[in-house]
Image (cartoon, rainbow, N blue to C red; front, side, top):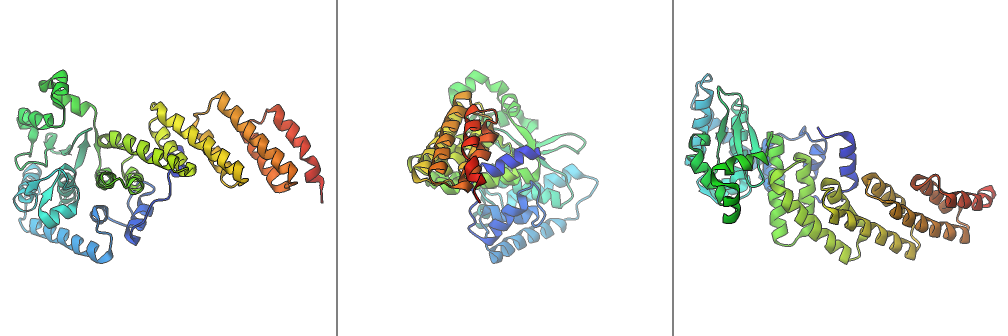
Length: 387
């Protein structure tokens, strides 16, 4: 579970999630605390795969239940857990996981076309194993995802993209050659082919099956990004992060999306939303200085635009949010005080008591020791003394 402050920051710096359907909206609300309660993992997997209407969700869930029933009919020996897992794996690759295709990113691709990629294959295998009484996890690296069993007599690694992938560590050379396709040749030789597996796994982490489901949302974000639908891609990333807060395979994708979508919003002078995107990016990737600069630029452009229109709305909100990020330097605070000074003068010139006091409260939050604030508080006393 993420720390409370991190969760609050995530809520502050992300825009409201889109909802193409009631099911997607309901799933989003369900997973906001990082846990599924209203939906089980299978239902969530199909909703994230695009089964976003009740009738289609029921259809695909029934397909899954029929698959479980077919496997249970084999009456596996409960003591032979590894053999049971191997039989499930073989059954799936003989009947459903027939053609590996990188862009076959969801369970719907499996059901409709019997095509799959590492995410779809791993999710289907893991969920079935879990429902068949076998505890599974996954391991996510910067380029790949596979299944791990930790509670057998030995730790077992399963490569789901190949029908020969059960206990892949028995043939590490073959697996290393598989990983090689994800690296440019010069990078492969720099790492060393014999060390490629160790390098890849040093950058990864184990994830549970709820976290694994987040990769479906990331895959749909990727597809939206391919069509330059940055808004939808961003919304899918926000949803994915509720499931998987530290997705190792999507770091570069996230950075690229944050940059492109934030810049698009900024160029369209939608500074409020641009701030939200860049603030989210700056919080997740604090070492990426460009996100910090773009967050500040979005904030100050928003502040300037609001003052030019004499609209106080959201000035307080964005100021509180940027201070929570802890990215402001002394010169930034000075600029904010100057802007608040302009609002203070405007409140006095218009004799707007309510605005004057709201400016004073925010100013005190920004710098309670400001000598300019003291002067302003004295200046608005006559306003507050009026009946």
